[in-house]
Length: 157
Image (cartoon, rainbow, N blue to C red; front, side, top):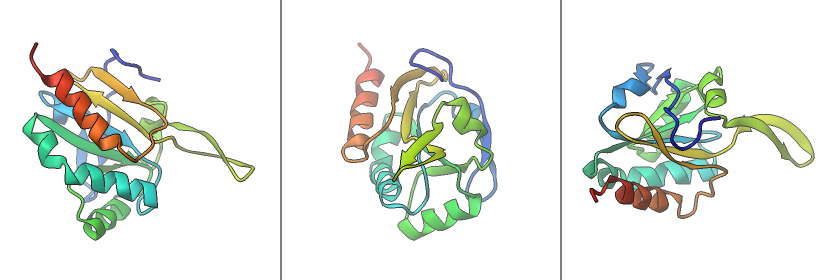
């Protein structure tokens, strides 16, 4: 499970158009990498809409925002179109990246156990080093906190 100060695990995954997007494509920029459970569920939709609403603020300070879930590329495309999302969404149907980042975990709901994504966000610097990790994210206020953290880390001292 990667921690702050570690180099982020490399990956290449398909986006909503089936085009391969790799972590190395973002070198030289800050990257907000957020992992979420499922397209079109209330919390995941709110999180994606919140990031999309502030995408220009992130880009102004040299950052991109990428969401990863186990949904298919087609699901991501429909999700983005339906909600006017401006973030990049990547599909990890095999859970390989989710596992490498430690967010594919055993969960419990209504007395039943299953594996799923634990909502988490990683902030990567332009060299691909993890500068901040949020685990078990609560959606309300999260995007604002990520943006403020990025601003504080990205400001020359």
